[in-house]
Length: 239
Image (cartoon, rainbow, N blue to C red; front, side, top):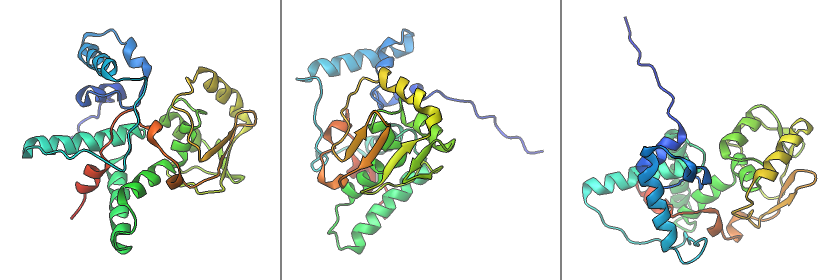
């Protein structure tokens, strides 16, 4: 008889404890009063008090040169993968490896003319669920995936059920009239920060999003509240 182990549901917030980072920049964490959150909240408060301003720009064209021992290097790579995955709503290991290998192979085919790191960031930021979250029409990327899977999102007047759908310049994103009340409620509860990127033209009256520019031509520094080492992520998949 084959015995299968039951999988227990693990809340998303518990995964932030090992990373010691508020990966999705959620203010709700600071309201947690249980003892297990005390160290993380104190660390985040100390980190914010050391920063000169309310936010910090992270330029992903440059990255610090880090050197670790073998054990710390493995842990750093593992935490880097987890941070990228949780920041984008919990991407699977298979999908993260797929787009990383695509970025590396695309670079090799073009004889290193294309920056693999920028190609990876562009592939993640052009996802339909990420675009909805950047426009503040939804509270989180997970809620955006729920609306997409239920067929409430349209791209160029066509219903899209795939959360991994990649948008391009000129695409128009709309919502079903059934959920306009929900979107309006999300906009009222949104902090409005970080500001939507410049490659999005958003109409908050008709609930529409238009892609007007390529992501490469705009700076994404404001979209990342902490440092994400995409170079280390790509190196971990190199052969």
